[in-house]
Length: 165
Image 1 (tube, rainbow, N blue to C red):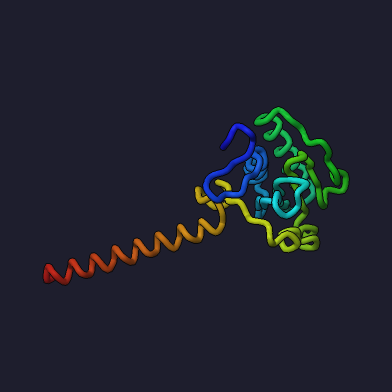
Image 2: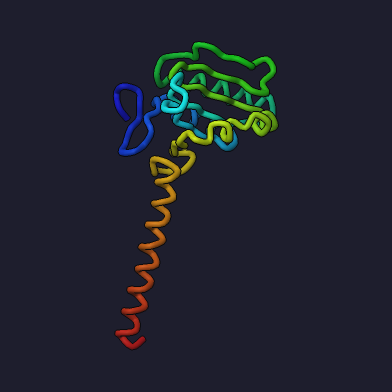
């Protein structure tokens, strides 16, 4: 993570550090299907979206509170604007360089932002996909592990044939 507030490692899309903090905060409150989309090249108005959802309005508000608290603690800033908190079916936290969308499950399915912005790269974060930098890299890593494992099995089979077992 760089001091400019953006993360960049190799081909990983640059996103503000605080948006990953927001994703982790949502995850800590049992948010469902939290994704981080790198929006910089597609939208130009903001660098990233964090999209997540809760099962009921109380959980949506709890997620919002936790995101605000943790982002404030990590970067000493609050959102410039919060919209939708009264209804809590879609709450938008506007941090300027990233937006956090906290949906009620049915509202998320209806608006389907992931489909609308399907061209945006998904950024893996530790709660979502472990250490790989993007979802594509996670798939590549899985293929590499599979290749190593199958290569190891072939070597083991060759070794057992040579030893006469």
